[in-house]
Length: 365
Ligand code: HEM
Ligand SMILES: N[C@@H](CC(=O)c1ccccc1NC=O)C(=O)O
Image (cartoon, rainbow, N blue to C red; front, side, top):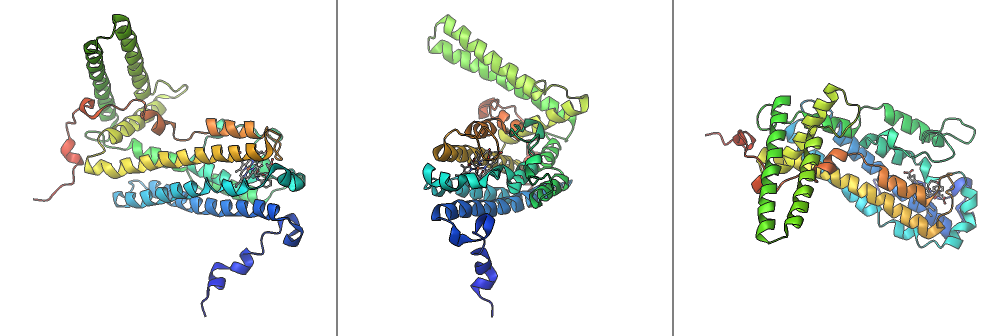
């Protein structure tokens, strides 16, 4: 007969909280809390990885089946919900007082969450650039921390190595897809760059409006000059961004790719009410929401750590909270998606499209 305990594997599950000695009777409530909270996180990470992999596999196709964009949005919405649930979960860990935790902390050394293979898999699958990674302190790379203390391989290392070899990151395939966006006409370099130039002209128009407004509000000539200087700097940023001149060391092909990518993101965000652009824009908005939640996770973990162990060195050998705060600040994957928000225009100032009808649902007459 089919029953709950066989399907959920309750007995097996409840036998996994015994720590290094597999003997829960030896552990305090505090230590079982410590173990269970981690196990719940690793289950959340498992679900996040499944959804991110589904989304990556969808965008890996060329062409990406338009009918499946809603599925991608569903996967990404679930990832956001999982992180949103995981963040407040640190409250349970904060019921551990520093003294209670110190009762068993030394036994954990050198184990650390730095060895959470699934967290590394999420970073790799999303597309975190290894060059951004902050060295932990004791080991050279984050991969070294996944080896056993005698340097031998581990299931965690195998997991992460497999993830590194299991195909392109979600970022890579998403950006490839975006770079193929037909921008106000065919999906060519020329139409992308033509749109970018028209968008910059929109910024020029916006500035004239703002300066007129400043004059009407009787700002002093000095204030107006200061405002105009600030607006001109904003245009310069927008130009450098859309021409991908802010990136060092790109060859011509890479720079052309970044221009198509950035023009596409600006295009989707600026005309999101056009039916055929609505789902793509929803997808990139959800990608931002995923990264935002991951940054909040890092921050919330760091605040919990500070509350429980202050600023002492981590069992994994890092500077502890200082290291964690740096990761929350520096680990950014979808910079282009975030940066676009700096240069978007009010609706009245975005360029008129020459092929707007091509982005409407066609009603067969
Ligand atoms: C009392 C509870 C906790 C303390 C004191 C703590 C402390 C730390 C410290 C100090 C680090 C930096 C590496 C090191 O030197 O060890 C770290 C890393 C990490 N911890 Fe925790 N942690 C706690 C709970 C958790 C929980 C519940 C999770 C959930 C999975 C977690 C996941 C991680 C991850 C993934 C890292 C690596 C972060 C990165 O390198 O980006 N930790 N933790
Ligand atoms: N790095 C933590 C120890 C710790 O939290 C931990 C130890 C063993 C297994 C998972 C852990 N979680 C996060 O690092 C600390 O410095 O206290």
